[in-house]
Amino acid sequence: MPDEIHAWSAELGLAPGALDGWRDADIAGAFARETGLPVTLYNDAAAACAAEMIAGHAITSRSALYIYLGTFIGGGVVIDGRLYRGEQGNAGAIGSMPTRPAGPGTPPGQLIHAASIFLLERELEAAGIDPTAALSAALADGSGEKADAIFDSWAEAACAELSRAVVSALSVIDFQEVVVDGFLPPSWRDRFTQRLTAAVDRFNRSGLKAAPVMAGSIGPMARVLGAAMLPLKARFSPDTDLLVRSGMARDLV
Image (cartoon, rainbow, N blue to C red):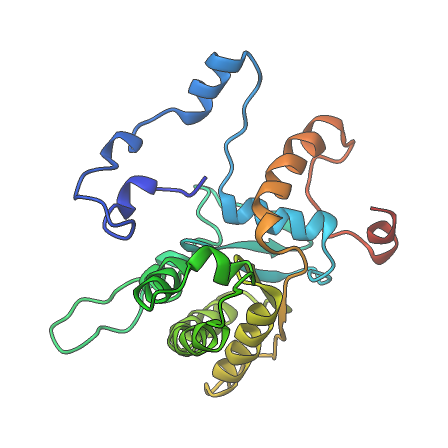
């Protein structure tokens, strides 16, 4: 599940304080009591990163910044071939990175308000397009071109801010690659990745090594797949660390 979910009521179109009950909720404990089973709580975007590491083929380097475009943008961090969660579990919380103020005297926003799928869904819905159908590439009413134009406009604005976050992250950790996955259908994901590459290239990156931006290989199921795999690996693998798999190991999955 997303971290700090109680903080996002406005983004979900809810009244202020509507999610306050989640602030101190013991979700893992509640499920454990109801099911009698051990329960592990994991950030959803980090779980998606784990899925790419275990079953995907986009993360091949020992260090990677993984970006998941979900309802809220999130991410994962791979360092020395391992999924790094951070001392407080906040590693990869790219959605909380600050963005440029909208104008003089305006406080900075967060990347979650500039590059999350809920913004694209709102624009599609306002144009009379079913967001679920658009994001699953299932539009059958002739609105595909209109949806493409809305996507391109959203992607341009999102990549303008996300590219700044990517370059900032590269200046802190020497990532070898940047991987982008999420709710988007493959054609939109590829176009988003190309836009992000172009936006990153426009920055002055003197002193920084290049890190290619690539599309993830799993898509919308990445979070669920990672959530399913992580407890199995923790319970049955002789190596409890989650490592980037070798090419040979990937072929056997």
